[in-house]
Length: 292
Image (cartoon, rainbow, N blue to C red; front, side, top):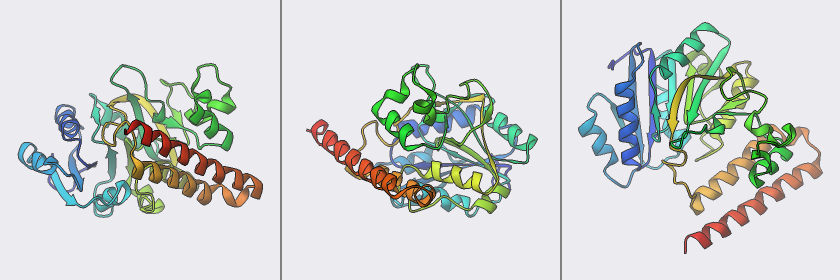
């Protein structure tokens, strides 16, 4: 791993999840890019000895220690300073497979109009993480997704649209959005679009970034020729706590208000915001019951 001027900057934001981060870093050692790369871990306020583990076991990894400043802000620490032509945002609960990094790099190099590439995310049990490719949610699509109706294999496309079901899991193509667990971007697009929005503390920042890439004329591309294991919820917890639930629903509201509310009828906006508040209340109640 090169100390300076790499072709690829890999950024991992960690908040605990020490064992998962260790496996992630080991996967990068086992399946590095054929091009020069630098790995930076931004520790965002881990309460355990995760940053010490990185220093002791992975001396070739650049470590940045910060407080719990949030996913966007922690990634921006590196994105704002990197001199690499390509950067990869990688979650600590992932393990890259052989050839994944170079598949994404090749896709970006072969099409200068692509600003961001995501890969195929596979779950530990062998299935696909359908969040690897997504469409920007419609109000109907969001309701169907969260109620589970849109996740059914026989759901109408209008109900399953959030999962970008018009594109096959093994089919490469343009999508509205890829998942923040694995997002590779080119420097020119980053300079044009800007950094992640730090108003999102956790969740929805990846969807927001993809939307802004498209608005600036940069393609977002799903490339399943590269695969990465994703222990979904491994770094943030499979069950969201109160603070995470509030951040998630606040992010939903911010995303809708930023991109859709202005061109939507007032009654629809009212219904959407009421729906988000109702869902937040239900989610907090479920969290309280499960936490007992």
